Length: 456
Image (cartoon, rainbow, N blue to C red; front, top):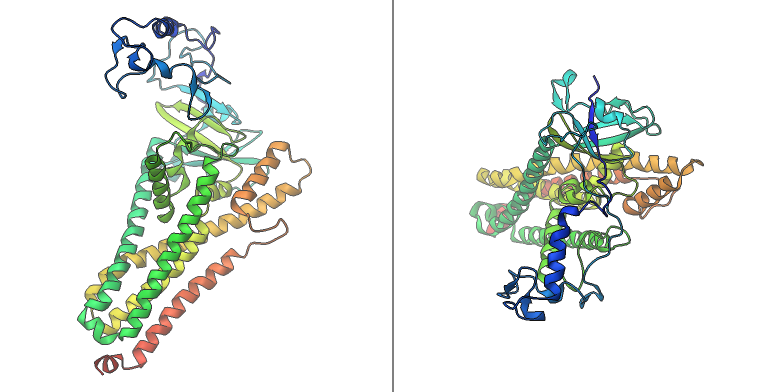
């Protein structure tokens, strides 16, 4: 049963954006800025807008800042309005006021999504134990909805939509925090294990001093290499998001305090280190209605607010959501694989079973990284095949061509259009090498009498 559209975005009557209720306030401000009262000091020392004496820089607006030129940017202090969509009128077709708690369908903003989708879409799947709907595929021309995304893979006729509800956001945020905690716990336990190599008596007896030194040095070098790779990826993403010609959402200018810029960079570095998904850290960008060619909608149905964001396929969404993680995951998988296997060898040979607690977090993290990395590489392979197929179509429009070029420049910079992805092969090689190196080290530790060598 299709839901009834109660209202869709409409503009207010044109009195230049529908701001009649603010006209008197604006006139008062303009009058006070030109003729300040006797209680306020002039120009730089008065607050003409609130008609009070200037008390401090923080609690009053100086009249000198309202007009003139911004000295930091060399532009007028007030911006010119390029586009104003007007205020939303919360009234139905009959002129009645719409309740903010209405249970009917209210489409606030819609771009490139067929309107019948929102009449038909459900938030739960009755045939799958009423699980929450988080993603759908839809026919671009027919507006048919397919809830089983994995069962249908018609990339030419279908589009992919991601439903962002409060339920899903809570789940995603919780999972992200748990994975970040696991990553930090794994790194911390590795450092503690390195210290125990030189402080634990049983370990010092079994493992020779040279082996412990070599392992500690290699571990520190590998961690520094991983941190340096994170720094490079952060700088790359920083330049992308600070460039107004490409994204421009990061506020970077001479007027921004250096501490605020450093805090944003450090936060982005931490997000990159724990592999935080883009939909969590870039939620402002993803949910903002000002889009180029990406489908987008903000609506309310059955009393619940919801966003729908569109991609060409689920593979494009997953690649965008985990942008730049494949190289970091590969390095971290190799590092964690060696550390986990070496820890298990040392614990078995030394009999210090209490040290097994330090191996739990890295062991779990190893399997989590392995699954995430394999799934990401599979999605990248399918996405690369789709990009190559769409590029060969002669009827590809200008918007689609821009999307294809942008996707390649973001995800597949180092490969030509005729090239093939061998990332999954290197994944198998790296994982196998990490395990075999540590197993070989454990065999050597078991064969040679390190205990006698350490005593001698």
